[in-house]
Each structure stands twice: as C-alpha cells, then as structure tokens.
Image (cartoon, rainbow, N blue to C red; front, side, top):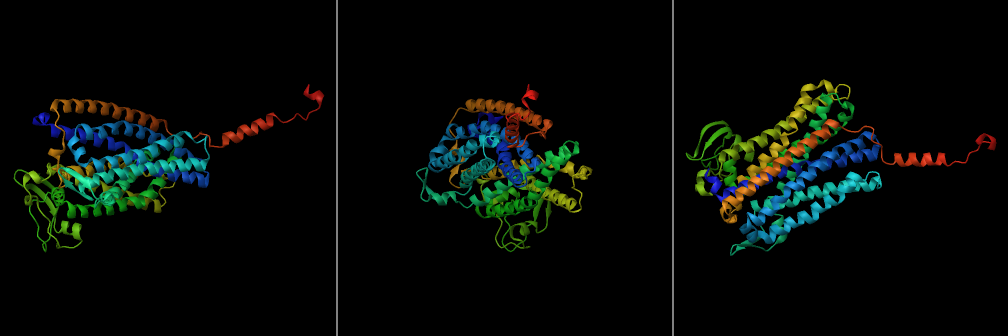
Length: 480
C-alpha cells in the first residue's frame, strides 16, 4: 500500500480515473453526431418519416451522453492547475492555448447549436435545423482535434525548445502539426465513429431480437452496416500507420507493446509475440507464443528487417515504461477487437448480399444479431485500451524526452490527493449509475412512431382554422 503515500502515483491514478471515465461519453457524441447527419439528411431527401423519428430517438442518447461528458470532464481541466502545476508552468504557453481553443471553438460551437438540434424541430426551417446538426457534429469532432493535438504534442513535442525549464514555442503551427497529430486525430475520429456505429447497430439488433419495432430498426441496422463497411477496414489501416510512427519516434513504447527485451538487428527476422507473460524483474518473458517472422511483416511487410528493433534492455530500468504486461495486453485487446469488428462487418455484408437482411427475415439471423449486441461495448474497451498503450507507454515522460512525470506533479500532501481521488470516484459512480438508468429508460421506452412530422401540425391547424372560418352558405332559415 505504499502508493497511498506517493503523491505522484496518486495524482496519476486520479488523472487516469478522470480520463478513462470522461472518455466514455464524448466517444458516443462525436461518432453519433455523424450518424445524425446521415439520417436527417435522408429524411430531408426522401421525406420518409422513419428517418425523422430515427433522428429524434437517437438524439436523446446523444443529449444524455453530452450532459454526462460535460460533468465528468470538468475535473480533468482543473487537475492541470492542482495536481500538475509544474507541467502547466513549463508548457502552459502552448497547452493553455490549445485547451482554450477546444473550449472556445469546439465546445461552445457544439453547445450553442445543440439546443436548436434538440428543441428546434418545429421552431426553425428544416434546412436551418440540418445546418445546426452539422455544426453540432463539427464542434464535437473539432473538440477531438484539439484534444488529440495537445496529447500528440506530449508524445512528439515540436515547434520549440526547453529553455530554463520552460518550453518556448518558436513555430506555433509546427507545434500543432507535430509528427503524431494527423494519424492520432484520424485514428481517434474513426474509433469514435466505429464505436458509435456498433452501439447503434447493437441496440438496433437488440430491438429486432426482442421483436420490437423490427422494421423500424432494420433501417438503422442497414445504415450502420453501410457506413461500417468503409470505416472498420480504414481504422485498421490508420492504426497500422500509427504503429509505424511509434516504431520511429517512441521505440521504448514499441518494445513495451511487444514485450521485446532483446534487440533484433537489421537483416534478421523478428517473431511476433501473440501471448506472453512479461517479467520485468528478470527482463524476459516467462512464457510466450509467437509467430515466426510475424513482427517483420507487421513492421516492414517482408521477412527480414531493414532497421533494428530495439529491445527494452537498451534502456535503463528507470527509462523504460512501467507495467509492461498492462501495455502488452492492452495493445492486443485493442487490435483483437478491431479485427473482430471487421470480421463481424464481413459476416453481415455476406448475409446482406444473400438477401438475409430484408426486414421480414432479418429477425431469423439470431446469431448475427447477438454478435452485434455483443459488439456494442467492445469499441469502448478498444479505445480505453488504446489510450492506456498511448499514455502509459509514454512513461516515464509526460512530455516525451523533455519532462519526466515525477517532475511534472505538484508537491501536495498525499492525503489531500487521496481525498480528492475518493470524492471523484464517488461522484463518477453516481454519474455512471445515473447514465445507465436514464439510458436504459430511453431504450426500454423505444421510439415514438406517432411523433408528428415537422410542418404537418402547422398545415393541419391552418386547414382547420380555414374550414372553421368559412362563411356559412346555408339559407338563413337553415342556419337558425
């Protein structure tokens, strides 16, 4: 229980808790906003009321996730001033502006037009409402851009230099466009979209299996599948590109991801470890299953390496990432889920081509639908695992190669950090239970298929008033 008296460890645990919990909610809002653009666009084009009612139904889950995301995200920002003040002092000129951009550009844009998107159906022109939906989605994903810009800069700091313990920016755009930024943003963008699509598809599959609104949710199931057809394979490709960058810029992280202790020189083949039991004390894997030449093909698409793969023994223990086993298996969980979702997509497409996804026979595909229900939470697990690899694998550095984590933490009494960690844990538990309760209520209730279409009520009222105020053409005697 020594960690209870270690301020740095407790501060890291607190930031990890807030980051892991907060990330659950923007994942769905950023990805689902793209889906809402699609279904509302289909409604405007076809005037099919089902698409309108899909937009209304899924926007309820969007609003719930937005609210929990706002509440859970506040402690994260405060920690830069409370638990990580030396870090903020050292890199605040860049980090502060990026976080400010996220709040002023992205969050405010999303929040400003969210009210129109949720409550403006009967109050604004349909085209204006659609523009509001697009701006909400743009704001949500712009937020992802700025957050990933800041985190990528921590991974590959660029655009300046450390001077007397403070990072001085010489080229602001070079700092923003740091080597990790583009692939990191794209990887996260498609991760949130893929996760949201499988959540929507999983909920739709659950309704169809339960024989509730089957024809209605067959539409959302097919829309999701049509988008996933492109997103799932593309996400694998971008993830591979991100791995290439790790091998180039952060070789210690790559060694931890693969539990590679010994250096493999150029000209040799490298096996890929499928499963292993890393032993940091003995600096070896106690047990391992590997694929011959597997790592060579993953890194360079050929059996022999052109460049050496450095092993963990190349660095002193204090300069290696901690918790090798956690990094190693988090990476495999992320990759495994990615390929599982691609496989599920292929299975679904095959059944679609065979005509098995027509509304009147879709309910017969019980195993396929059950697989989609199972897949609904997997994207969250993959994203959280990926962030563990990304951030724990960066250790012992907060700003890679520039500021060590031990030097970035505020000098606070351990008891105070433990108290705040406990309070945040309780509050997040309440938020999590509340989100599950209200989310399950929305899903159990289901969509309102009698929801009036915007414009129809106004036309009905006008027609009724016109009839009511028509002059009575009957003879006076008949009127009396």
